[in-house]
Length: 324
Image (cartoon, rainbow, N blue to C red; front, side):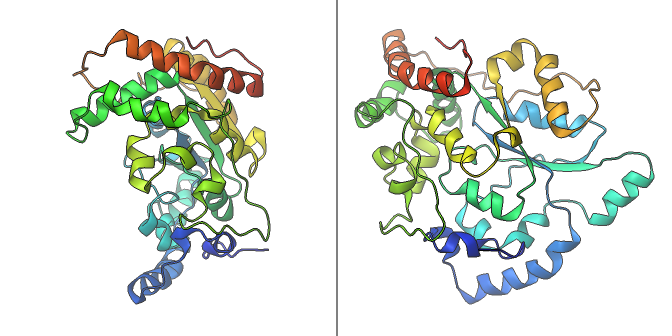
């Protein structure tokens, strides 16, 4: 099945993608306008997928500073994981980026290749994002940062506490999730979209797409904002992307290595993007200063939970990640 770049939902619709169903007159009108205006804008060459709270803000800032980049928006676009964004069509997405003639002007001025990119750190975990992104920008270079999932969960929870969106203690927040995920096979169990396949469940195929979210994902909001542990079971997420994109198209960086030796990780990043290795300024870290105290016994319980999942990920990647 082939898909027009300005109608990316067509390929996914056969799988009952819940974000491809909207047919309200206002949505259809906006899609039409976007399909006309969008092609005058560039599509991204690079996309930072996540994981959230793993250094994506820092990597994005480095990309914005590199002379080989024309633009990398500071805000997260979330086109492939937010209902209304996806419903507005690929043209709507492209309107976030510079006009095509801006790249031509930059190249004439010797500032090529004038790449553009974006970072939306929920893409990695979102069950439908791989197929959506492949339908729109199949040649984009993809970047994922993976952080020790226990530390990632604590940071995610602390970030929400600081924003006033989480009133539970860390123990309260993860206790139910630990129970729901305790019998999960190591690494999870990703579902893969196959040509002509259709899912029948009422949640748009979430149960079939993710063994992790099938246990914890009562609503999209819970999956996105409160799945502190589920978001750190990376193997399922990585395999879902590898099922759609060649492995060499997705660069996986380990957050702890990046922050310990930024230049080594950045050298890999620039090579992945086909850019020269040039100096950039010190990284910008989206860290929170107010960090609540957490019972060490609870932290150790979470670490114990993650160990078989981390071991499965290490076996898949063929390297030791150094997580406790």
